[in-house]
Structure formats: C-alpha cells, structure tokens
Image (cartoon, rainbow, N blue to C red; front, top):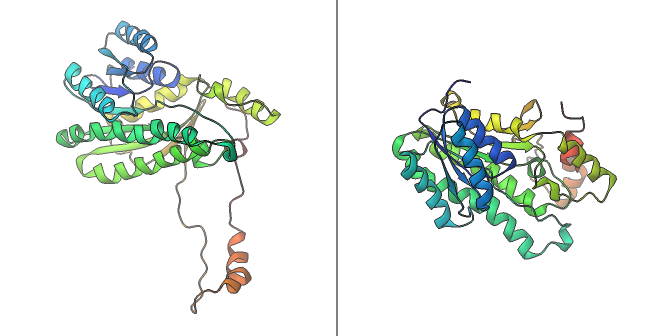
Length: 295
C-alpha cells in the first residue's frame, strides 16, 4: 500500500471500535499518525496499540466531542503530538431510537449534541489550523436515515441531515483555503447499529443485512478522502455498502408550475398540486431504496 498519508496527522472521533477503528487502521496503513478519540479509554488504548504496531504515531484522547473545550483539546493534542493536523474524521455517534410521539427532550438533545453540535465543534477547532496552512480535509459520517428516512429516528435523522448541510457549508466557506469537506453514509455492522430495535420482521431483515457489511469497507473510503489525491473532491455525499460506493443526490428543483396572476388556495389544489404530485416523493425509508442484498 502506498504511503499516501505519510507525515500527516488525523483526528478520528469514536475510533475505539467498529467504523472509527477501521478508519484509523486504514490511515495508519498509509503512514498517517492518528489521535484516537473515544470516551472509552480501554477501547482507545487498544486501537493505539494496533496502530503503533504498524509503525505510526498514535495517541489516546478521551474527550467528548459534545464539549467545546474537549473538541479543541483533541485538535491541539494532534498538533502537540505530531506537529500538525491534516484531516478530521467525524465518526463518533449515539442512538436514542424511539417513535416520534414518545420521544423526549433528552432523547432529541443527546443525539443532536453528539452528532450535529459535536461535529461542528471538532470541525471548527481544526478550521483555524487548516486556514493558516491552506490545506485540510473533513470527512463526516451522515446516514441514509437522514438523507432518505427511517422509522423511530427523528432525532438521529435530523442530526444526520444537518451534518450534510454542515459539510456543504464548510466546503463552500473553506474552498478558498484549499480545504475540502465530504460526507459518507455508512452501511456497516457496529455496536451502535446493534441497538436498532428488531421488533418486526422488517426491522429484523434490515439488521441481518447490516451484519453482513463490515466496517473495513467504510474505513478505506474514509481514509481515501483524507489523502491529497482527493484534494479536488469536496461538497459530496457518498454511501458505502459492502463493495458498493454510491454518489448520493442533493436537493435540487424537480418540477415547477407558474401562474402569472398568482396562486389562490383553490387554484393551488386545482392546478398546481395535480401537476406536482406526479413527481412527489413517497414515504421511502433507507431499506426501501437499498432493497437488494449487499454485494
């Protein structure tokens, strides 16, 4: 494997297991040094040991990404330990799945705090370094639960769709400094996914499919997006499902109607809606769109 990340330093959040660990290992295989962030110190230490066996620099960080000070500390730790920061992979996450009419304020706040607010905190902490050195890469984990939809995940879906918007805004604002930002919607079995309810045959089938999809498939794509060879790729959303890589669509106008005299409530339902309904989206879920077995 070519040492595409040699001399570079990356912060990977939630890197103590599963997808985060896989990303850290792929970066290390390419010669990159890694700050292994995970609130579980034992998991983080285990991954650091694996990375050092590959001959790269690696340090443990146990800060919470949902803390502004913690986010700034993990970026500073990368600079202190390795002399620079070249990429941030926002991977850490939690689930608090519950049907919407039973969702509590805490259910919503806890998920948004980690996913959306936390990803902003870590990204913002790195932005000043990236700007000053005129280079840098962000990779954020989004989800088809937000991009497409899913039951019982209003909190998670809102946060993950928000991350797609955050990434696009970062890409636009930081392009002038040669900084890029992309998203990945990962399909992979992990302890996080293991918390998904399996109360119905449909849910059980979804989980069984997920078990076939290993984190290393996501890890290699995330690591690739951190490389200099990906310097021209920014503002994109990818999905990774076993050996498949998808470029996901982004919201654009689909159909329009016009009335030179302006619309009334009656004319909207007589003319506008019948014309637009042919192109309206169904209440699809992720598993409806990705209905075939992973390959």
